[in-house]
Image (tube, rainbow, N blue to C red; front, side, top):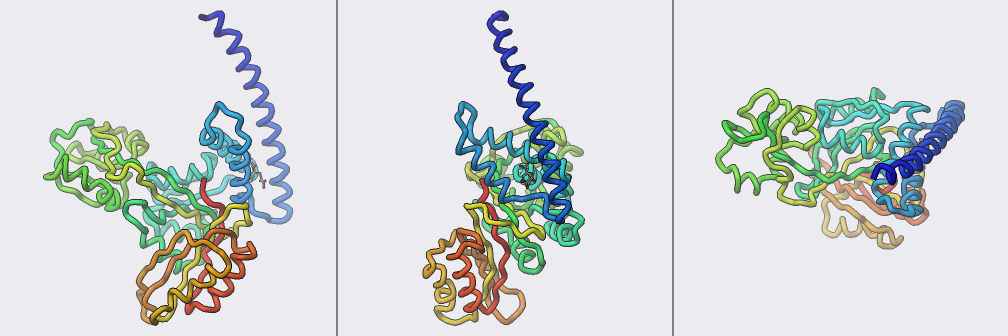
Length: 356
Ligand SMILES: O=C(O)C(=O)C[C@]1(C(=O)O)C=C[C@@H](O)C=C1
């Protein structure tokens, strides 16, 4: 056994030495890129370029490693190279251990400075003020729908969307001891309580449910008090040393949350992009139908249509619309121009690479 293993490990050692050498070369070139960018004050983080690199890696992957795994490796390689140019700061809904933090690492890799914020409002504020280079905010959950506060702030602030990231959301029930003995209350963010209500009704119908600011806060509370159970990610459970009572208790096993990456960057086309905008029309019969006609005329597909009541007077609803393609693509550009002309209100939120 040992005799068979030794030569294989020698081969792995030789390959690792080559990988390390190539990584160092890549890092030195990234430093040069950094100097070129510094001369023109060009942005360090280029989401469209990173998306192209990751798609290329999956296209060329000869196996046996899975596409998702080679992409994870290359995302971290780019993250480390990017950090040689500049370590970007990313604001997210904290504390550490939230799904938002997971979304940050999935999009930017781990060589970033995470800035946990107390609320979605604060993520927008930190990003607008420049305290953070980017912010990551939840936009919609596959079971619970839109995150309304995010939609409202997209409208009210000057931030642009420069990327998107979607992550599976698996909730676990956890306590300090790993058992439900003596537990009187289950804490979680209201969205998580809603996403687990069928399971809770079935297994713990009589335990009080209390909504708190975030699942990570619930984990903190549970770590301090054995009468409190938390619903949170297992990552948060590990962070606050909780025992798992039951994993994956979300009612929908395919539960996902989509996040937007916000900032001041206007992302260039990557070849597979999405454009987000907000529209409003006067409250007349057929107005919405007419408003959207330019999309059909120019063959632009709509991938999302969400309405939010306007809170101040003139129009009844704002429509949050996502379309396929980049604002610089000819068909999209023409459709946007006509939408702009037809709409009583028009705000382009941004064009960005479709998430992996
Ligand atoms: O191509 C660039 O602009 C780089 O800065 C290099 C690099 C990379 O490591 O591949 C790093 C950061 C950018 O976000 C994109 C790519």
